[in-house]
Image (cartoon, rainbow, N blue to C red; front, side, top):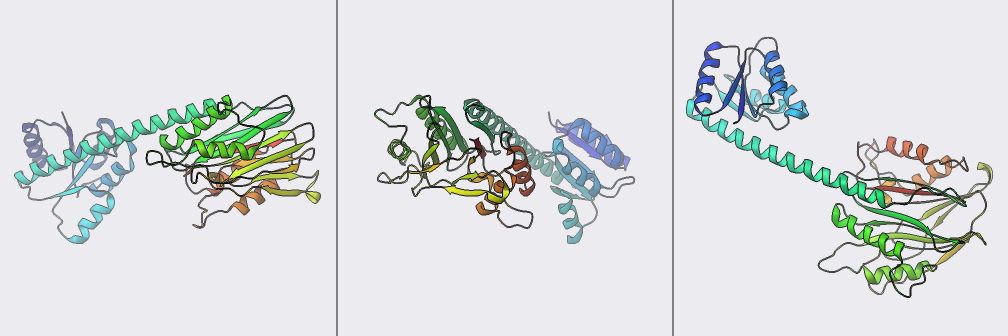
Amino acid sequence: MFQILVVDDDPAVQLILTRLLKKQGYDVAVASDGEAGLEQARQLHPALIICDWMMPRLDGIEVCRRVKADKKLSTTFFILLTSLGSIEDRVRGLDAGADDFISKPIEINELKARVRAGLRLHQLSHDLQRQKQILEAEWAEAAEYVRSLLPEPLTKPVNIQSRFIPSQRLGGDCFDYFWLDSDCLAIYLLDTAGHGLRATLPSVSVLNILRSRTIPNLNYYQPSEVLSALNQTFQLTYQNDKYFTIWYGVYNQVNQKLIYASGGHPPAVLISGNSPNNQQVQCLRTPGMPIGMFPDAIFTDRSCQIETNSTLYIFSDGIYELHQPDGSMWSLEEFIKLLSLNTKNYGKSNLESILQIVSSINTKPIFDDDLSILEIQF
């Protein structure tokens, strides 16, 4: 049974509306002024409110505004009861959040019809909100599942810390690192295009394939071969229109050499040097299309020597594609500058200070895209 709250300071109107609505099978509550009406609304969470515009202590416009500002009352349908008929007054009511109007004197059949229509819209809004909550819960579960698959921090012989912050809709970020043998460490981070489970599932598939090394006759020490194999395995089809970018590297701790390849991914950033005065910043990236776009795509390897006390950052584009307070987009170059200025504590992770600054730049409470970053200290 739908509950309707009538808020009016006229006892005669209260009586008429209560009798009429109860005859229609509704549960009716009554309040004699705006403050009492607002308090009852917060307690009862009615499906529909019929509220007089002109009342003492709190007028109908203010009651409407406060009801619509309350998340728990977001699906409540609000009808303003008024003798004011000008367009300006209607605009004021709509701006306050009113869903409909009933003019005085009340026409009974019109009232019945508007209440029925309002309750249909309330039910629709309630159902949509419920579906939204279910989807958000499923996305949260999926994000927790992805988080459970990610590797634990590593402290020896290299220090690896990571952060994974899923967006509200969950994207396609995933990363891993594991020892190929006692000397060689494989590290990668990938980002599938799009959001939702259709983006997450390919990322999880790649993680499982690489972690279990199920592709036969593949040299996992050679990044370009790994990317080529993934490109053949995850080709775009009519059923699967998802591609992904990836950065993959193998570090040999004996000769301190890093060999790497990338497919459409932002560069990894290597910062070396013992002090800000002799700091060197290198962007590690190779030419290559995102995985899955073209079956004949070619991937190449590059390598570099890793100095002692160097730090390598690998990240997804969600960490720098942000809307700044002035409306402009933050850039990769600005993020790299941030990394260089905040990498100063070797042996201690700098990720928290970096992410605090990134969060302050983002103008939204939740990131639009997944945010992933690895910090490897050699």
